[in-house]
Image (cartoon, rainbow, N blue to C red; front, side, top):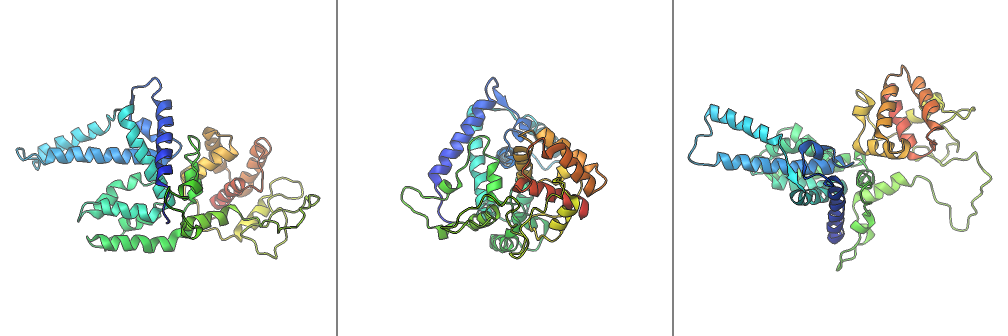
Length: 369
């Protein structure tokens, strides 16, 4: 990844944190642990705050254990201390002035892991105590919410020894294998947008004394452009013809010779399950896995945010209700019919939009795989 605009990141994290804190602490003196879990739409930001508090909690525990005058190895003392620390962890109570710096740090780290996961997780390995890398990663795993596959395989598999170098090399090698399956950085960063839109170009732009060449940008920039710009632009000089209403953009998953047609609806203009099945079964969609369990449990955080904002008018309860109803359907056809009758017209869905396509694709994988 090329050099980033650290000043933009600093200003953004401060502005974001100030707005969140001003809103939450209006009429409140403290924030609790449960409040932090649900503080913002960015789960990763929330859990990075908890990660820092967990680190502080561990530091307090180590201070107690390092006291040379008492036997903390005694089983009774150990059990009592563990119980005390567990009770303490459930009594998180932070004032605004102490909380805001934690949030600034969490926002910065969330942006780091979204845009450069290899660098972030390598830094995590560097932060780990010597000879206890795996223990550190296991303890903090619950706080990693974005690009987790980059690091999770190291936690699940033994054999890398105690030195840091093998871990660092393994992270880079694994990223090269799985990078096409990782979630788009734009969708992850979009979870910050309800508070303050994040300008990725400004972040990857220039500091006062440096200008970044487009070739120095991270791999994710090119992937995002491919994912969000599947429709070829008209060549210079070509006239856009408006009197061709039956034409639709060619999907990035279709061959150039495929007919340009709407494959989502049938002759009646309604969603057609057989047409959707025909479209999705020939796609190679690396980011989509078979849906295990309920749809709500299978949603990635970026999908939950996108569907809520783009398809369900910002109402997360409405999304959850729809997913529950779809889960109770007996077949893909029944689910598609329910979506068509209940949401397409009422919510004014654009059936060829990316959010609708991904939502329908998710339903397809729920019933067909």
